[in-house]
Each structure stands twice: as C-alpha cells, then as structure tokens.
Length: 583
Image: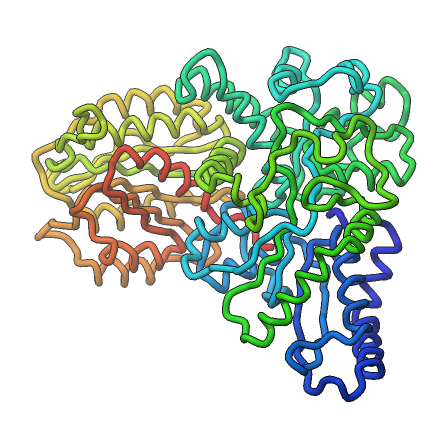
C-alpha cells in the first residue's frame, strides 16, 4: 500500500483522523459564527498518497468558513485504498470486477471518491454497473507510471542517458537470463494495470499480426514472467528489491516493477541501501490521474458542496500541497518542494494528456482494460474446469461475420484459443451435448478432467473431432450431470467450474425442466465445495431469462452474444470472473 511508505507519520495521521475532523468542525463553528447555519456533512474517500493533501485543503476551507447557500459544511476525508472502495461500489451497483473480490464490509461508499486512476471508474461501468454515473471526474493530480529498477541494474541499461522502450524491457524480461520483474496484482492496482497494458502492447506488436499464435505466445510469456514475482500487496513487492549493495543480493533481488513516480520518490526517501531509478519508458503509459468523482445518488446540497470543494482542490496552493506528497498537478507541472527523480520529464514531458474535464478516462479504452485484466487472470491463475460444448443441429448455422464458418467452428476455435492460455497447473475436461447423443443420454464425455500436463494433447484432439449432430438441445439434463461430475472430485485450492457453450433453449421433451434443475442444484450444492456454472449463449435463440436463474444458484453468470465471433473475448472474461479469495 502506498500509505505504508510514508512511515509513522501516515499512521499517526490515520489514527488521529476522528479527532482532527472534530477539531476542524469546532474551529469552523467558532470562525463562521452566525454567517451560516445547519450542516452539510460531505464524506470523501481519497487514495492514501493524496489523502493528506485533500484533507489539508478541506480542513483549511472549513476553517476559513466553508458554506454553500448559507449552510455550513463539514468535510470528512478518509484515506482508503482504491481497490477497497471499488469493491464496495461494485457491490452496491451490482458490478463484477475481475480479481477484485468482495467488499470488506468496513468500507462505506462516500459522497466523493478520489481513486488513483480513472481506470477504476471505467472498470466499474464495463463490469456491469450500468447505473453508475459519477459526475465531474476531472483530474486533480498526476503521477506518471514508471518502471522502478535498482540503480546499479538501471545503469547497465544505459540509464539515465539512454531512452528505453517497453520493447527493450520485454526483451530483458523474456530473455534466456531474464531480468527478475515483478508486479502488484494488476486487477487490484492501477499503476500495475497501466504497466501491464504497455508491456502486453509491446508483446503483441511482434512481426506477426496482433492476434497470431506468435503474438499470443509472446504475450503469455511476458505475463507469466511477471506472475513469477507478483504480489497482492505493494509493500511486499517493494520488500523484494535488493536491500544490500552486494552484487549477489542485487542479482537475487527484484529487478523491475511498474510503479508510480510517487512510489519511487517515497521509497527512496527512506534512504535504502540500493535506491530505485525511475525509468520513463516509451511509449508513455497512462499516468495515475486522481479523478474527483462525485458518486451518484447524493443529495443536491452535498453535490453543491462537492462542486466548491473541487474548486478548492484546483487552486495554485493545492499544487504545493501535492508537491509535499510527491505528486504533480494534473498538467504534469509540480509545485514547490517537489523532488523529481533523476531523468524525470519536466514539467509534463511526453506523458499522454487527458482531455480537459475528463481525466485520463478520455484516453483509456475500457475494452483494452477488460481484455488485459481477463488475459492476465486466465494466463496466470489456476483452476479446474469442465468445458461443455453444444453440438445440436443449429450449431451448423453459418456465421456471416466469420467468413462463413459455422457456429460450431467458431466455438471450437474460441475453446482452442483459451486452451493455449492455460498452463499445466489447470485441470480441464471436455464434453459435448445435444439430445440422445449416446443412446438416450444427451451428453458425451470426450476427455475426462485431468491436469493439462498430461491432458493437453487429448483435449486438442477432442476439440478437433467435434462436429454438429442432427439433434436438439438437451441442456438441463447435461448441466445437472456436469455439475455432479465436477462436484465428485472437487479439488481444494482451485475454482471448480463448468463453462457451457450453447446456441439455443432447452428443447428436450424427455428431460428435466428448468424448475427441476434448479431444485436439484439447490439440493446438492455444498457451500464448502462450490462449483461455479458459467453459460455462454450464442445467437438469437438463447434465452438469458431461462439461464440466469440457473447460474445464479451456483454463483456463476450467463453471457449472451448475438455475434458468435465475440465468444472468444467472452470466454476469457467469463474465466477471469472466477471468485478470488474474499477481501
């Protein structure tokens, strides 16, 4: 966590928060006197590194007699990690964020949220929070995303004189004697996500087409290299940098990690034996932009107070407060007392500029973010899965957007693409289903669930053998049988799941009904050994209303796309939404 880098001062500030707020309000009452009445209590959650600056400016505003329309204002600024607030907002608005997990229960959604990056706002929107529409969203600070490297290692790369690129870093990370790169979980950390986007873009820009097997291999290789030294906590990752000037310690320590400029300044301020160099790589990744987001649903009086607070946080004086926290102003300039790392672009350098009033969200691609987080989750985590593919007659339907390939061919291609991302720690099996596929049985096991270390080739052969039948869609009987099969040999320490592809409604007149299936699932499910069911529907004939109640029972989710060529992306997204450990 960035706040931990500030040492005892940050801890003391957090401990005294309630007393300071109470004191500020008392002081305001004395100063404001009869000029205002009543009280508007505005709650602000700010990411830890900017929270002291926001709180200092808000306290000063209150002490000077903060009021809106004759009503007194009190401001409660709380230091909160962005991922924790994101989890709480996601829970409130019914969104699902890959890798974030459940809200802790101790974080309350504020009136105003200042996360470290606009990427959180975009992820919430694309993650299903359709009613989540915060206002303002303009940046109030900036910290470029850099690659932190121990100075002796950076010197070997030509730092600080040589300008390096993400392609240069990629070569170092994936060479025969790779640089030990690490990363904070990018699904939980905005700086890591920004670095991940840049590194995977470099990996995808091979001599082949971006979607080619070679490009995907390079991308997966880069992700797995990072995953070797990943950490869910920032301070744990920082602790892996060398703590001695001894060459052996430097060689054994962490060699590179995507962090914010503020992180590097804060780390070096502790006078470590081996300082970190901040490498500003080309092309510049999107910086942390600290959007001022007024969350939806707050009352008009609070919205008015938030508007004035934003004006307070855009004054020249606030830029100097930011400098005290090793942060830049939104335009990249810095205030008095800012100590820039060696080689830092000044004032704004060539970092991507955000459109006025939009924060960095104006330059971020929500689809790219979703793909990056999904790709990361699939390529770097493990699981146990049964893949079940519809082979009913309707799967012969040609797909206009796929050069005439059938729905079956497009589905199999998506499954093959996903298979190439899973490492050998996964256990995967393969079924097909229709009606009366094996005697009176609607489903057929092509490959049992086994570790990919021994099962990869059989799965590839099984997928290659899949052809549509002339039968109907025996969906419900198949799902129940698949659930029982995955449940039988449930494996601890992994997410046990079923991913089923279909292009139609259940039309097996001799099978169980939807109600019977749901009742059976409720009866046999075990909260201690959960099995997640994910259904990916293809085409116009799929009924999401029919499928949602089924996946809801298992803690899964239903995805439906009219365009079958999208199922590859949906497949990755679905796998990425497997539930991580509770926060």
